[in-house]
Image 1: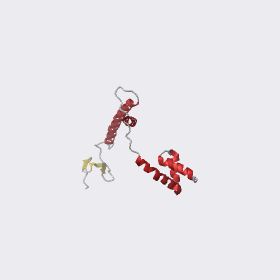
Image 2 (image 1 turned 60 degrees about the vertical axis):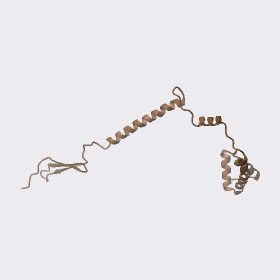
Image 3 (image 1 turned 135 degrees about the horizontal axis):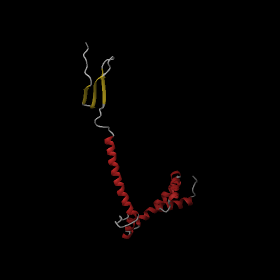
Length: 161
């Protein structure tokens, strides 16, 4: 950054302290102050000389109409039922958004409930067969829950002779 002349530094420091230096010029002066201790000292001198003046000024209560104007710009009055324009349509879209969110929540809950699969299907199934020459299924063992095991006889076992 370039070095500021003493006159320019004083002029910018005075505007900075008064609050009339705005935008990019204010940011540039703050950057210069971080790098140049002389400019920072000039700004501190201006602060020291101008700040006591603010303490001598008596406070002034702004008129009520000014506060009403500020409040109307910050939070405009709610739209009346017969009112047209942006605020009336905004009420519709807020209601529509709430309804759409509720319907989406119901669909999500239903999808999560149904995604765990049909309730009657077993967790696993084992088929027990006879030895090699016959190899026919003899029993079906299925587990439907961790504490429920079903065994079904398909064809009785023949005892070995």
